[in-house]
Length: 140
Image (cartoon, rainbow, N blue to C red; front, side, top):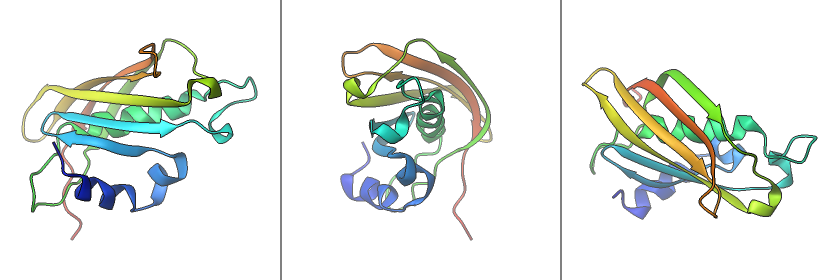
């Protein structure tokens, strides 16, 4: 598994993930996981967690699965080429937090495939996704 220092660097980087409360919790070759502590900012007018949050969580977790590099190489997420999401249940503030976990399912060096789910603490599946990604590259 990715060491906590490297995940902390990514989680402290700011940007979209930070604005939406998406925290990387695990990253290894073929696996990625994120967590979001649900706040009132995540709900829609019906007081349900917005589906866009589930999609963002899945996008991040799935893209992570095919671009892991061991230290000292930088950890750079994959780039999304296609993402298909199914919304299966609703989450509310009462759920407290959500976890997305994803696994690489195939591909090669230039393109990879991944599947994942968002779950409530009870284990209830909230959303699922599959996608096509390409490994990221270090910024130059």
